[in-house]
Image 1 (tube, rainbow, N blue to C red):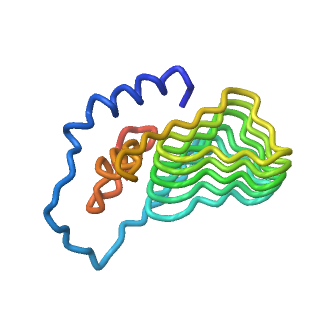
Image 2: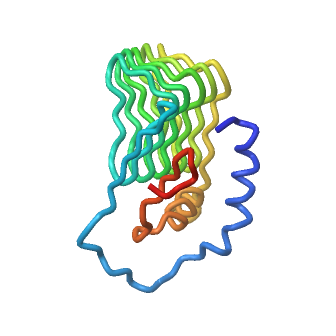
Length: 175
């Protein structure tokens, strides 16, 4: 995700706010949770419902977690890291060549970690340790009304708990 598309995304969320009005009806808890994972031919990884951990020495094109965290360990290299309703955490010595983006969570860049592109947290916080490095823009956008973050609420409502896992591969087929 490049920064040029972020203003359009933020505008879309803002304009869609009335469509995501809170529903006071009580939701039934599920006895199950959807957990999905996919590795693609181009070296990208995507998960839903769990954390995506990129271990030391691994090189991954894109790392995406929906309802989970992207954790990049020391010595791991990732092109772009995106967490939706989760956090992007770069441990000391981790490297993201592109952007680190979280929608509805935080981006944490620890001492000695490096992001060559942008570090973006929409609906969460951007936490940069003193000796971390971000080559691009540092963006943190959060709107609180009545003690609740509006952007995070929009993301949570868009990703309903009953959502099924649909990760599309390069052939545009459901996995």
